Length: 372
Picture (cartoon, rainbow, N blue to C red):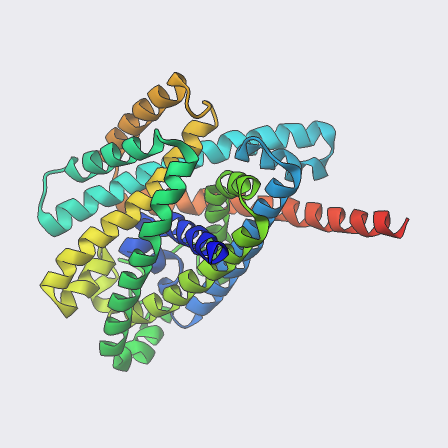
């Protein structure tokens, strides 16, 4: 029973981390997946493969090597470039990923701001401020406290997203085929941003790339501090729930593409079609999804320069949270997702190549050692 609970907690934590502002609002799903119409499944398949492989690799190598800090995982993979170039590359990825995770935290603040303005007509900045205060209060407790919080909220969020998507997919099922043809023809290209410049494989690589940079340090450290088998099973289960839900989300969005193509928060448009009351409740769920991603993202950025439990760690958390909140109040939410996720995702995918080379080399060396 203890093993099952551990696996479910780790699965829930992975789901919580993945479902941030972009996925919970479905803006991310629109730009990366639904915008490809009949080829949306190609993007999802590419991302799912990247997600499962890279996260298992992070956790496995973090556990095997007993890394003291999750960010040290970059030294392991970049070692394939040789000692000199590997050292430079690992430092770059360590700094870049920490900065990227921090900027992704800013995106979460922007998402909270957009929801508060669109759904409740709150003044600009209130949603970002409330989220920032909640995130700061959680991050100061460190990794164990974060894991406990995320493991409980994630499953609730994914179920609610699945319910709204399933219901609206059913109501829009008659329009899916025709709407796919319209999307493929570029009918909504003027109002619907698309990552990948028309190539679903590039979109999947970009999407998987930014997910890699989110999870690298986080899962490497979790892999070190938990039973590896439990972590890896949790990762596989989370991938089934996440990408199964993504398929349903795409069907719902495509079925109602005329309403969601230009919306800041497509998920609320879908929820409002079911019931205004449900939309109010779902807005809260989206905020919870944003919070569960914002917490580990801010932690990753702060953890790269400060050790947990120290005064520097707490001060850095507070200052970084406030600064990110200020940025989110003045930069449009949709622009943040398209530019930040798209450009940085391709660089993150480069890390996959180093990971594959490293994992193949270490497995080969193990076989050679055992043969000797």
